[in-house]
Image 1 (tube, rainbow, N blue to C red):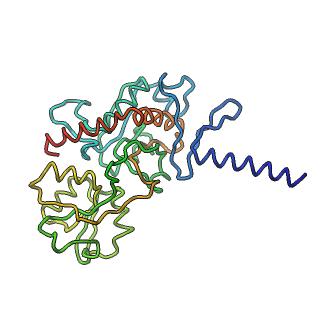
Image 2 (image 1 turned 135 degrees about the vertical axis):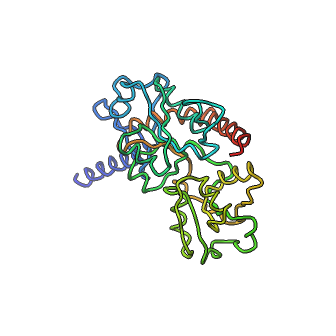
Image 3 (image 1 turned 30 degrees about the vertical axis):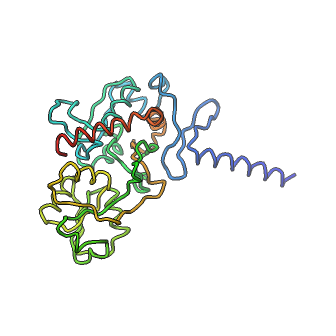
Length: 309
């Protein structure tokens, strides 16, 4: 009898574990409890066709009451986010991520306020409640997931993406891999996944500097202020294609592929705001099904190229 009792509890525990791993909403006394998966980001989603639920709690409830969604971004990472000089006001924030932010606000039935800032401040803005969401080509890392609540992935590179190493074309014969970085200076964007890649994979170098903007990283290489940079391979590839005279290149064969849990750009919100992220995931699921985000991305690539970004 006792053995059967233990077995029953084990079955219940297994069911709960599977629900948690799947990011499901568990009903308790008719109330949905929103949960994280094993990697500490949210995979579950809600139906967003009717907007924010009337009984929304936390930040989602505050957004409904205020009628405004405040989104933090660093608008210097084309084609996901960039400044279009031919537009004014909030419309000047262009790129596929900015279209995502607009769609989230549209589904919520509220106005959108995009708040530009340095990338290193984006997560802090939502952690402290200064902004409601961060939409800024954010990759998952365990450290980020410990500070904020992250959505499911909404953009996955067709090329497989990953982190690459950028150098000057003139140095192609001297720098062919990370073993050639001994005694050389490296740069990466502060607070980025590329910064983490340097820490994990590059042991020997002269100096490693963290710069605020991705453009600062490219400019440091061009000016000879650094010998190599760890970069997002897709974004760097777009920059090189749009600026063929920049004299920069990605080192062939040097690519740090990410584990599945790191894949995809994600939206971030204040830690513990799971209902908010279930709403965001509802919008993301619509976009994944329709293919709209990819269309926005392709259009942003064309516009960024026209602007020479």
